[in-house]
Amino acid sequence: MLPTASTTSRTVIVLGLAQLLAWGSSFYLPAMLAVPMARDLGLANSLVFAAFSWSLVVTALIGPMAGWAIDRLGGRRVLMASSVVFATGLAALGSAQGPIGLFLSWTVIGVGMAAGLYEGAFATLVQIYGRLSRGPITGITLIAGLASTVGWPASAALQSELGWRATCLIWAAVHLMINLPLYAALLPRQRPLQASAQAQTTPDEAGEPPGVRLAPEQQRRAAILLSATFALTWFISTAMAAHLPQLLQAHQIGLGSALLIAALIGPAQVAGRLLEYTALRHVHPLLSARLAAAMHPLGAALLLVLGAPLGIVFALLHGAGNGILTIAKGTVPLVLFGPQGYGLRQGLLMVPARFAQALAPFAFGLALDHWGAQALWLSVLLGLLCLAALLALPGGAKAER
Image (cartoon, rainbow, N blue to C red; front, top):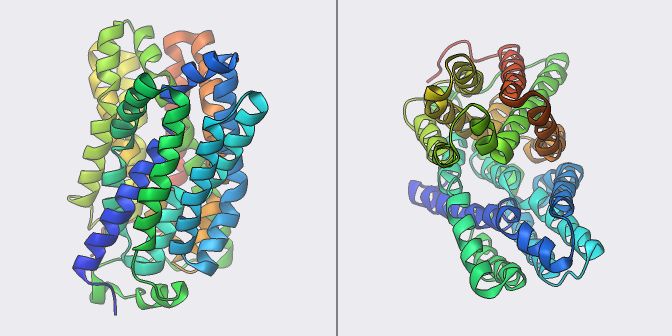
């Protein structure tokens, strides 16, 4: 028997809140703490960000192992362990005295991110709901999508009042006192493969597409295309997150207006996820992913051709597309390959994406330095390649109910 609606709501709220705190205390931490951290340790800002980039490399390397552990041990146990790892890394970061301690701390946090961010949460949901995971996956991204909205002000306020070291220690305590108990309360507790088997239903039984049956050669091709899609998507989103205000200024948009436009990305991501949860929920996940992949190159091309007045349109299209693609990262592999071995497969598919994330701020920064506003054509090209990869995937030719 599948979990009830009330149990599903509880699971989504638990995972969504825990993911919000996990993202806010890891991925979004350097934006607020890097400068005071570098100043206090006598290091260049770039070195602090290099340590963060290194943590993304660690996440890429450890991700497949974390996914395998979720498949074998269950998501609940691995997520609980990730809270302890996060707390250890953050406590070590708050105690770091130099570059060695800095890099070691971010190494531990990178292990926590491999097991405790979206990939771990998505794999846990797939174990519970199988092919019916699309709605719960969308639900937790709606909550966790506010991670920067909550995490940045919280870290900034704590840093201002108590300093960056105390901020890291407080975030470590959050993982032990909030996230760990939340994961411990996560239901159901049955064996993961049993839960997944229960959730494999037909369209007539559950109103969800049963997935595309792929031959082994098609599976390999689909895996390569999906891995490329995720790498391109995460390169673009990370590059925009790091450089969007500067990029908008290169398009003759003033600093104040550029910051206001950049601030629209978060609400646009939430709006995109709401669109996925409502209007697109009965459309094949691959179709909604293709629609989302077209949004960034369309918005960027409009800004490049028509100039500053289209800055807001670009930000809204980019944010909405990125929000939907975050969900597609969990739902498209599920519908193409099924729930068995989902955790390991997700870890493998995301390896290139994590490396792309680590490279994006530096690489796009070089493009911006050399080409100025025209650097946006690079993201247009990458976005079109992402769309082409999704169009080459099998399935999704029509909406399925």
